[in-house]
Amino acid sequence: MAEVSCDVVVVGLGPGGEALVARLAAAGLDVVAVEKELVGGECPYWGCIPSKMLIRAANALAETRRVDRIAGKATVTPDFGLVARRIREEATDDWDDTVAADRITDAGARLVRGHGRLDGDRRVVVGDDVFVASAGVVLNTGTAAAVPPVHGLADTPFWTNREALEAEAAPASMIVIGGGSIGVELAQAFARFGTEVTVLEVGPRILAVEEPETSELIAGVFEAEGIGVHAGITIDAVAHDGEVFHVTCGQVTFEAERLLVAAGRKPRIDDIGLDTVGVEPGRHLTVDDSMQVTPGLWAIGDIVGRGAFTHVSMYQSERAARSILGEPLGEYDTSLPRVTFTDPEVGGVGLTEQQARDRGISVRIGSTDLAASSRGFVHGPGNEGLIKIVIDEDAGVVVGANCVGTTGGETVSALAFAVRAQIPVETLRNTIYAYPTFWRAIESAL
Image 1: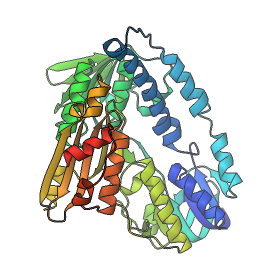
Image 2: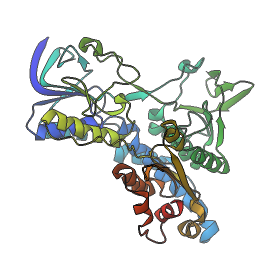
Image 3: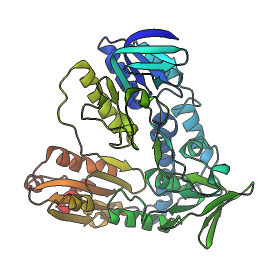
Image 4: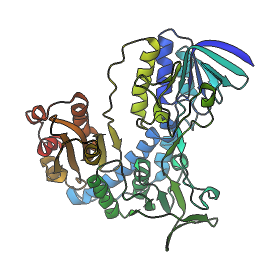
């Protein structure tokens, strides 16, 4: 094998890895960027961008169907092919990463295609080459869709988020296994294009990482839209007869043309040579607040278990860059803002009520019905929502919140800053909230 010297090797070019390569190369470092799939990772090709394009199209259909209740008469005929073409042509270049790859080389880094694997301290093997990094290695290998060990499932042509976003037509019917963000987003989007959708969740409720009130509200919206939601069930077996999927849950068998498995994500850390550097991973890699695993080895993104979101990976990318370059880091932001792009949107930040109580915090709750707000009243159909604020009464600060509504992902931003900056609740109360806006309901909750 040929040995090649460099300053840093970045393995995995999802959004955080790509940003890190550009940052370090701009600082004058000799950077080797390694990717075995598409430069840009899951987000631009099968995740964030194409899924939100599908959701935007589906929401446009839903808004048109609301016209009869507030503005006149309207009819709409869904055409899945329009958004499918937009995803293929505008978002993914037919799943071609030439533009993203050019960004890497234009930044001054070396792009190496192939599977990167650690081979001892600061060494990465890719094919017949060994890259020896004087400063160190950054791992950003991401996740793959987790496939639960359900009898018969592995032998069927099920979809993951990738096949769902590559689809050129909406199926007549679909079963979704998993009630997390990916599952519920895609369930609602396909349903609005005319697919008969059933969501199966083995946990006690959908969107389990958010507040119970949020789960209940979204489940109610789904049921009103004709989406079946079955939580707290056991999935015993899956079969496919060549045309139809059969999912057996106790005495009940659900049938559909397609089966989407959205039962979580699995970190890709099994075959990246961690044993060669003495690292024994659990479900994720353990890092300090500089994103360092061991001296000379950093990790960012979904594989570190601090929030599987693009914005978290980008944040961690900058921290790793500062660590490598010897720049000041600042305190790590643990507020974890997040959005599930259902309609209504679910914005969350910080701790849930139960998480706060489990930490021994003296909890006080503020909540309000968004439909009862002035903006909710004006908005009319589609105004379902809530704001729930979790307060540390002893410290007098907000430690968490859920904002569910038409602009839930935007509304939560104000509370995200409140959690991050530990703004006193009295200051939040003594604040002018523009009228009539959805985020004015924060004042009502307070």
